[in-house]
Length: 234
Length: 61
Image (tube, each protein chain N blue to C red):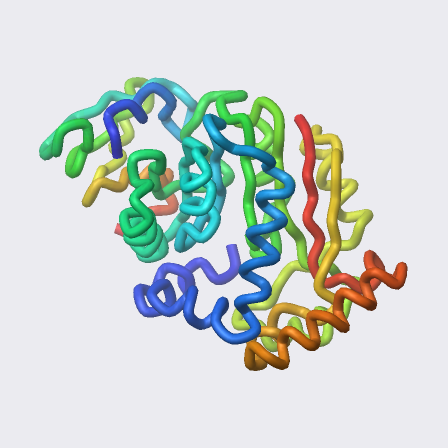
């Protein structure tokens, strides 16, 4: 997997949230959380697994809403950030963090009500293997996002620290069918890619976000969106 | 990890059962110890409350 070592470094983990989700990145954080909540619906009492949970941004949010959640990541440094966040939010009794390999999950078949991964598939070298394994341990829902190859993100891709795998709709359709999943819902967003929002201050970001939304609503949405959210069923 | 997690955890290599060995606990919480594959014999450490279920070929230690 690309960037494996990078994500394992303590200093990267400690600065991860601040670097990505301050300034215009705040908008991204909000939108991603909304996408997860829209797809996963009311999570109270649900058994949920998050793959590549990193610093626990989504893990903690869903535990706060009553999910029983397991956060799995390869990096001990990222997980220790997650655990601090869970303790601070007072939800550590509903969260278990563990290190593991997304291609070989330590869970039985069909155990979870929902399994999801955010910002994972752009780093995945063997996406079918990972998605198949997510589907194996879910009894209903699998949710994930992709970065799109038809968008402005292509222009920014070379700026990313480790390069990203980009997906077309055909790629995702094939990926789902190879993993025996059925697409249930989808959403597309961000004409201006994350890297752009991350670099600009809040007040300007809000203006660009308005323009971004207007372009998306004009009907060009899916064609120009840099991020897609895919909600699938086993 | 909480001891109740044992109800769902299995060996990542072949999904067989794991056995819990505890060195240090705090009530329900297992702080230090290990999970041992009953079929594979593989040892997965629990360090500082976090189980490491990375298969042996992915561990840096």
